[in-house]
Amino acid sequence: MRESEKLKGHLMALFSVLVWGTTFVSTKTLLQDFDPVVILFLRFVLGFVALAVACPRILKTKGWREELCFMGAGLCGVTLYFLFENIALTFTFASNVGVIVSIAPIFTAVLAHFFLKGERLRTTFFIGFVFAIGGIFLISYSGASAFALNPMGDILAVLAAFVWAIYSVIMKKVGSFGYNTIQTTRRTFLYGLVFMIPVLLVYDLDWNLERLMHPVAALNFLFLGLGASELCFATWNVAVKVLGAVKTSVYIYLVPVVTLIFAALVLKEQITGLAALGTGLTLAGLVLSESRLHI
Image (tube, rainbow, N blue to C red; front, top):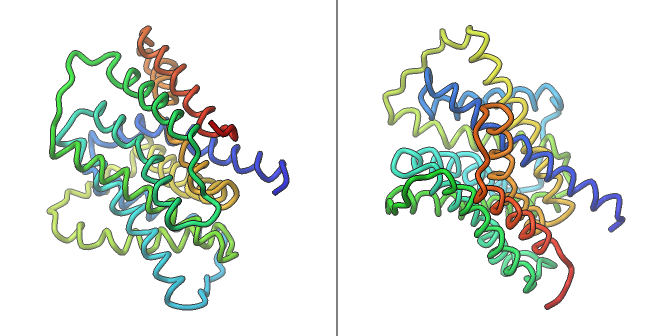
């Protein structure tokens, strides 16, 4: 693989996490007027429509095995991941979820080792994982007054990390099909939305659609739907196709770092000494995890 292709993959992954790390502001704003499941559904509907406009050509797969891959990606990467994460936040602290969800790369590495060719595990990956998780822990708890285990929420956060790992592995397989990235992302969104429908029917949701006419709500939905969903899922999928599931997944370590910096710049939240140390450890973990060294 050419170095320019690798650089493209790294830039795509970096761009995705830079945007995902800032989505908490939009989501937090929308939660004042909308149910979490409604936010989830509407952002992916918007993303799906935008992808359909960008590439209206219908994707024709070569058989049911490929279609099952798209179904699995939609179920894991769209429906289950966000449902597990959002429900986890109702049972446990956001700091718990932030740390636990960041273990997704270790799940990805293990699954890729068994199910993908050419995704070998290196010692440096595990060393980097220890550094990164230690740094993320310091970032998440630097401003917390106490640490507490909340089994239900923490288990759901672990499940969120696990299904995201499954999604990453499946998308590496999807990348080998040779289809257009916009088309594959759109098909994934379609199945994700289909699997959300039973949830929408079970819960008595207040859609509050008249609030969509308010500029603040509209702009935040546009950001989540067009930026964090349509664009970032597409760029992430390109990165997985180019770099592989394991090397791309370690960029997830950066999400808490981006959130920390964005909160300091926009919300004027103070960066503590522990948070600064945690940022350094996380960045060191990312570099080690991406290293080609054999220890």
